[in-house]
Amino acid sequence: MMDEECDDDLKIWRLQRRKELEEEYNRHQLCNKLKGTYIELQSERDTQNFRGFPLGLCLLHDRINKEDALHENLQTIAQKHPQIMIAHLHQSKIKYIEEMQKEEKPCLLKFCDGKIATQASASEILSMFQRASLQDIFSKGLIHEIERFLDITIQVPDDIQPSKETNDHPDWHGHTGS
Image (cartoon, rainbow, N blue to C red; front, side, top):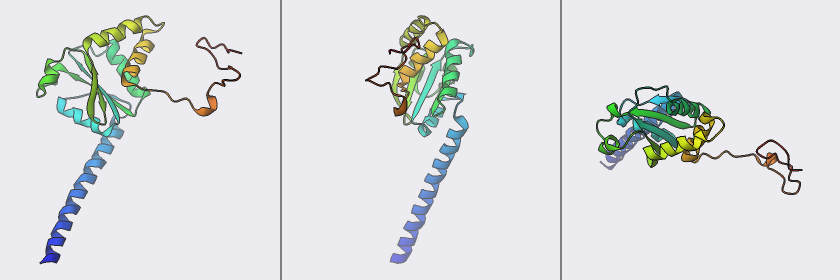
């Protein structure tokens, strides 16, 4: 009797573990498929896809023209940072989550480990556009603003760090300090 119970428990555990592994594999396959692309979500339920990525960004919007500066630059960021899932969801496809329906558009949602960590409101996005317009190249400025919102930091390898003794690193104009 005891052996049968242990066998049943083992079978249940194996089935559960198999299901977990299959879900993990499917999530991994989905992540590989979505890497480096700017994705159009079909419903707010698709935000579950962010679970496979350590960092994600979703634009909630009411725009019809997908060739505007925000969409174009989000596509560029998706290609530049394939480890980040970047997507957009049109207002008309939001059916179930009331908070998303009520949010003023456009709005950026930042995901960390599949959960909404923070958001940038329409007024914050407008501020990003205003700061970007002060740059020589608007699109580079907007990309920088969005990367700053995502808190993406670029790591410089130790072997190319500027020397404190010689001060021979280039300044922002490309001139060296020595």
